[in-house]
Length: 494
Image (cartoon, rainbow, N blue to C red; front, top):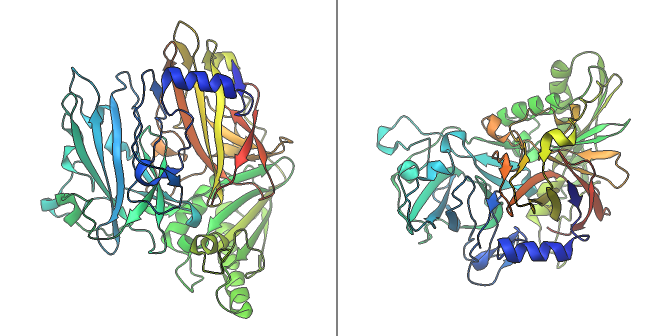
């Protein structure tokens, strides 16, 4: 068993790409006419590449395209021409073609992705929000197979054929121009949002329904320091309405997720409010103080009286991203990152971490793990890694991504990743997405279980963790089941 950083195995990785996938090391953060991404699953045949010229994530493209092999034993599905279109003033449609590469066998999409587990997620990373597919209304005329999803998810796709699949989500704010799309086992890809009326959106009855619950919420991410506080950064846009210090329903769910990651029953809690640069100093100072106090008050009954609580507002004095672009124009994504509430929790009686299982019990065979990319994106890190089996016999990785959310309290499960600073004293855990809770995506990470990697095959995994300070250029990536972390450079991003 080996784990290797991206710089350390560049030549070996190139060989693996030629043998396994035509685009294996491509960044999943491309979009536009030629965005490609590899499956976060086993692959042993070439993967097609999309036409056109890719543009960086966050750029303006005509339509994202995601081309990848699927998981399971057949490895025959590809997602193509992924697009996001505002279907109404408050809804967003995800639509793509699922292609069956088999020449002999028909497969239903549900053999690859069970929609009942809602393994479809959209991420607005600058605003720290994740979206899950909407539930259906009581109107039987728009009834989908599972919520606001087209009826054909359980219909077989003939060999060499394709099926157009649709899912509907709550729309992000109008200032959001791209979202990260995670479809089942595929590596997420950044896709531009097209305006209402775009001809790329094909008609589907499910688009005519309406929703009462946006099924979205803030990402909750923990960065724990040895002997120090665990830090949480909460996006203000989903904690509060505009110009308000009253906590939203989504905020209550986010605070519950935060509390589950607190390792201890006594200590100190410090809450810090921050705003963007719009408005006067006095206005922003007052609003930041009120919002920090609201979060502190909401944490008290959740964490209990053995903690001491304090709150402070910093107004617009502590930005973490530029409020304006280099040319002086407005930077809405940067301002969104600055509107936040930071929570620091220091425990005086932390429980000892659960001992890690011996690596041999989690990984069988000569499996090798390679960190493909660690990239900044909207205040987070997106990490992709690949586990290869060079042996002539299958190798076992007891990979499990259905773990509980108390990541800071235990050892990593097999295949789960964490990002550490180079001293190993600060650990960024996988973020917890908002929306309707579901154990199938306890984390923003690969959402499947692949216990066996075939001879010569690879398994690509991904995960979203909190970003370290801007001056940090290298991190260590720890993968459950492998004994040693791998150093990897951080690729700059928006």
